[in-house]
Every structure is written in structure tokens, then in C-alpha cells.
Image (tube, rainbow, N blue to C red; front, side):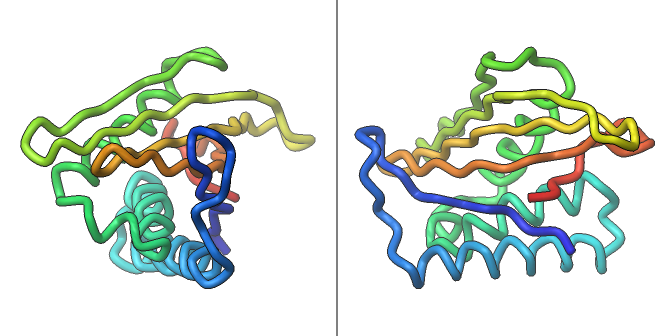
Length: 148
């Protein structure tokens, strides 16, 4: 089952998420991934569903429009595909004013030989950044699937 562990931290490290929001984010992530899979969205659709489902469940995603969501999903794939660990890839929607970034933080190979990357994602809405963390693994087709 696909899930994402999301935590909402302000820049100063203090948490802005309570237990209900954390649970909502986790359930939203799982639901988003399952909906992406059920809709036949492939790995990219599932990854976008997980990432954005977690945000929606955490009440942040409801403030993102479709263009924001597409930009976030595309940026995540690009960062995981192309960027070395520690390098941030950003997106910004000039129409909504929302923005975000994805930073791969560690790359490793599993015992079965599959490459995986841990990453940090930030989405800024109304000047308030929300961070989440996850792990994605490269699929045989070259796309990345969120696994936690």
C-alpha cells in the first residue's frame, strides 16, 4: 500500500499540524495513491495522487489549484530524475502565487537493486511554508513511485 509520511513544520521547526491533521494527511496520501492507481494513472499518477492526497488531507491541498498540483507533481519527478542530493528544484504559479520545492536528500540502493531516494518537499501558500518528507523508488519504466 502506498503511503507518505507528512509532517508540517514551519521554517523555525515548530509544528503547525495537530494529530487530526497528521492523520488526515496520511489518509489523504493513501487515498490519493489508491485513486491514482484505480484510475490507471501509472506511476506518475500514483505519485502525484500520494503527494497531493497528503497535502489535501492535511488541509493544504485544498488551497492549490490544478496548475499548482501539476507543477508540484512535475517538479517532483524532475528533481528525483535529474538532481543530485541536496539540490532543490522549485516551482511557482504566478497566477495563484503559490510555490514549492523538492529536494532529494539521500539516494540508496535496496537489497533487490532498486534505486530509492528520500526527499523533502515544501509547499508555500500565502507565505506559509509546509514541509513533508518521503521516499520514492525508481520503477522499471524510469518513473518514481512514492513508497513512504
